[in-house]
Amino acid sequence: MASPPQHAPMDGFPIQNQQLLVGGIPLAQLAQRVGHTPFYVYDRRLLTRRVADLRAAMPPDLKIHYAMKANPMPAVVQHFAQLVDGFDLASAGEMKVALDTSMPAAHISMAGPGKRPAELLQAIAAGITLNVESFHELETIAQLSEQTGIKARVAVRINPAFELKASGMKMGGGAKPFGIDEERLPEALQRIKALDLAFQGFHIYSGSQNLKAEAIIEAQQKSLQLALQLSAHCPSPIRTLNIGGGYGIPYFPGEDRLDIQQIGAELAIAMAHFKASQPDTDIVIELGRYLVGEAGLYVTKVIDKKVSRGQIFLVVDGGLHHHLAASGNFGQVIRKNYPVAIATNMQGEAQETVNIVGPLCTPLDILADKMRLPTAQIGDLVVVYQSGAYGYTASPSQFLSQPKAEEILV
Image (cartoon, rainbow, N blue to C red; front, side, top):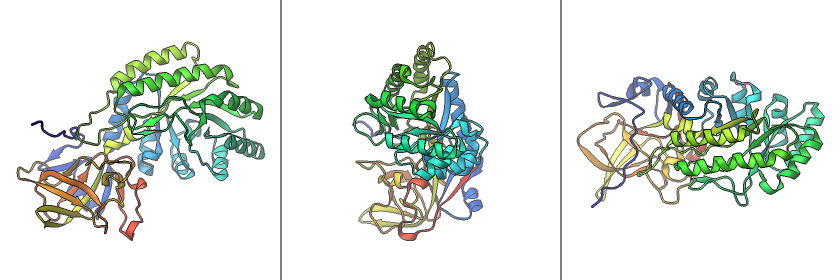
């Protein structure tokens, strides 16, 4: 009988004396420093290493942008400002965080299908590039640009005819609220020229959370080809081509890490072909989860241990209100466990099968379902790996008026 699939090795955080170290600090000591559980902790060493490894694998002239929606914590964004080439935003709130860093506004872009006029005005005044999602939005930008006397910087977000195959979340292909349909791009580009806006280029984001290198390669090649086809219709040369991201990380048993070496080698060939006719275009990949996801932990404490009809339940002081994704209620059709560990008994030989549940009055508040883990006691710390992206800010933190979680960078 074949053994069940296992999680990919969670080897980014070292172990010392049975305890997980984060930023070189034993987790129990770190919890004392924070003052309470639950909390999120992000390791700057892992953030720095991930960007360095990515740059080593990708073509040297490729620009890397951080998609702040994955984790907009100000300290994390400040750290990335020294590592990446630009930021991509999804709201005026993220814009404020980005503009508080050293990142030049000219290297920041903003996307989203429902930008309010006030947000558009803020971006125009800041000099941020707006990724245009509709013809109505384009006209609103033009009106605001005329009112302020500031020529708005715009790129067109394209809803391509293709999609990112094997993607956890498809953002392009078919009918979508994101971007302007590929077949209407010549019309949009003519209108940008007539409105005398500062055309920057294109944004093509076709999907996210993909672990298939071949699918990402195909989408990147098609994005570059599409931009070449549209170049004849552009009101000015393409300054920037954002070909999106989609790079995934392994969350569930049986998933393997993405082969970025293969992606980088194929992207170098495709970029060389593109730059033969568009040598002055900056080509950008926009990554959020891939840069920050594996550098974060969610930390919670066991406050009760009980047995119900033969099953062991570890009740912890955190749950879906802080980490909706780990509970299985954020996009999963069939619930699967994130990698979870008893952080204060990492290598204990005695093990037991447990359910780890939060304090909320709902059966949905599950962090681990029937996982085999070292034996835990009340007071032990539990960690959920792969928690650097779409964690606290993607969760219903006000649900049942529970205490909030802290976020720290070490």
